[in-house]
Length: 254
Image (cartoon, rainbow, N blue to C red):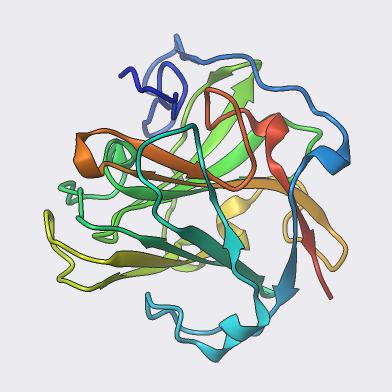
């Protein structure tokens, strides 16, 4: 797919139980590391665990600031998009919020190519010594795509989690504003609330984080109102969402 502003790599992530193709996916080379001051930074506040409602109503969210995502490129949609983060002894909490006019989402299963429709995305690079990071996507209808990405100089594959159950399974909820949570519905916005357990990220290094820990991360949104893709990002990257060396910095507070 060719977009006015490239959203993902030229060939998107390959999915499978393990690897579907030994050939791998080719993407552009990862961006340069740069100095720490080149990247946006966010301090993640600690919290006790809480239940998800999809609308961010839990009082715990008052501890987290809203952080804006920025429109990639020029033209297209100008919907406000933002996110909040918290962490606990058991995992990471993420709340993403975006203005919208229509739900462009038809997929009704997990582990599909959700990025081809309206989606929020989370990328977590827990240790800069290794080119491996976790990617999470969620649609307005509440379907998810959690995958682990080894990325060697732009060649990357998506791996599905094994024994994805119990304390290794995410919790998630979505809510829609101004209309029904249905494909094609006219709305004013939508939110996604996600809990990613540390147990799911094993054996990535740097997990679980401690007060003072530093991770790299990025947060994205894609929306298809008007028949073409518009995209947002927290940390600016080039032509691929997978340019992990350009991700922003998360610092875990005490």
